[in-house]
Amino acid sequence: MQKISKIKIGKETHLFAFEGKTIWETVREEGRHIFQDIPKCGKCGSDNLLLRAFYPGEEYHYLKVICKDCGATLTFGSPKKDSAVFYPRKDNDGNLEWESYEKKD
Image 1 (cartoon, rainbow, N blue to C red):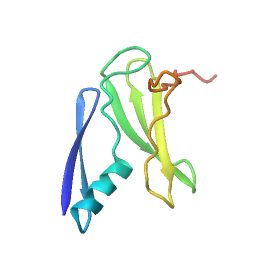
Image 2: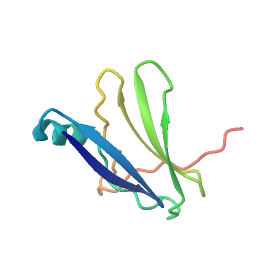
Image 3: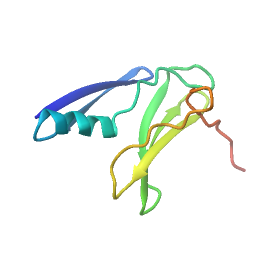
């Protein structure tokens, strides 16, 4: 059984397919991986966003939403041994916690 989910990141719509032997397994698998629509940058308000994957080491892998206008990022990821994606970090008010771009010397 397969389920297709649409997630909108800025101007782009991404399709994700989830599979399981039963409807319960399929929906559970989607719930482990899917995240919310991210319509705009939390720092500058732009909808010029990219979704990218990063593999910086052996233990974790990450997805980042990157603002092409101001460079801010929203990061979430998971341990490679457990492929459940963690939801993006939120502040005490429930807002997504975007990191500002800081130019390195």
